Image (cartoon, rainbow, N blue to C red):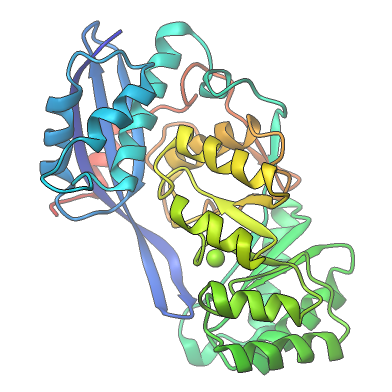
Length: 369
Ligand code: MG
């Protein structure tokens, strides 16, 4: 089964409400959908975050990949690596990931097996997911109490046992108060706080003291401060485990992070690490150095979420609940919604990614970029 054609289309799906974070707000998922056609007329789909020039660069990649076996994901990366005038490929990691995703979706369909099988086999049928708690709406009205009300809404409907709080929107005292309120309301829940590096090191040290003074236990503190040096210093002086999807986001960051003992948990992501295979290599490095592995979310829609579930299902050491924006968007681009029960996603069991692209929805949300 060989690659014949690959196309890229950009879709913009609004969020139910503006989602606030340290650096601004999100009001939509802006995603690129990759569609692959094989020489036998089979199709595969992939999804990744928006990147400029995705249509043109996808055509450049498609020309280089034409005729390649859809299972040859190593050769795929190798061919893409060679695209460019300098040392680096002109096809960015997220785009490589979206194309590889479409390849393995098509391969799974051709073989009648789920992508998780192609990744070595699922070790779990369900993947635990954290409730992603954003301050929503206008900043002035986004109080700790309203965030707790959102947690109640999500926990009641979906039974989440892990709560991830997006901090860094308000002063750190407010973040600490939010976490304290949630800890009181859900004493059994595992809590995470992610201020997206909004705190300079001194402020992060103060934040850690304040969290401790309030008797708060956290599963981990995610990117409280920016950069490996500050994270390492904070980690030496903090009782909290540190996670990151900001200072360890590429292979060249792994060795310095290990040497500096900067983090406890690294977040996988099928997109920016460069695809499924790249994530498996990254996870193997984390395993070797005793680092925990979780999974990041970035306004992922359903195809990406399905991809995350296959990757997580086939990664034995990925034991932290994954992050997901799944409940934040007004609509999705897949025909059947993913199943989420008691805080766990059911890993799709159909061939390939196990989800179908909703072409009408894609046409509805497509934007010219
Ligand atoms: Mg994060």
